[in-house]
Image (cartoon, rainbow, N blue to C red; front, side, top):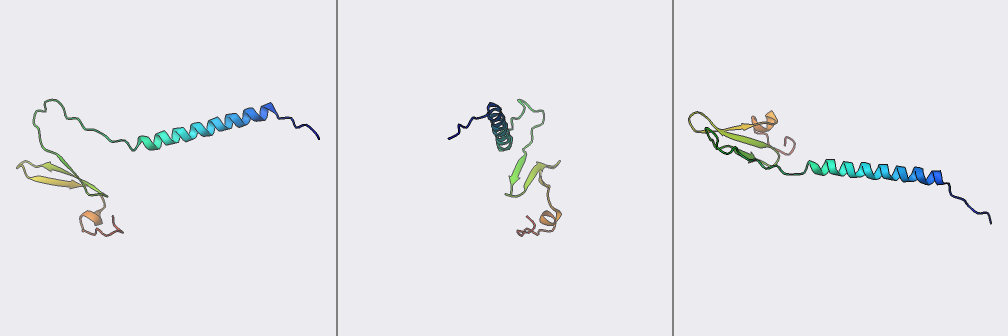
Length: 94
């Protein structure tokens, strides 16, 4: 029965390949999961003219509510024209 000899060079190549694959997977996981973190908004310590600002979460879209000169709330929405302006809120337009 012949004796099989392993090549040391082949093991080094496989080890380097594994390290590259593991590094790429870890880097990808960090980049993907890094986008899932929450953000905390901290207001300035003493604003000159404080105003109430609201952020509405509609599930698929968000709206910003700001006061106008008279103190009334004005809602600003960014999104699809059909969804907001025309009121077509079906599943195909979400």
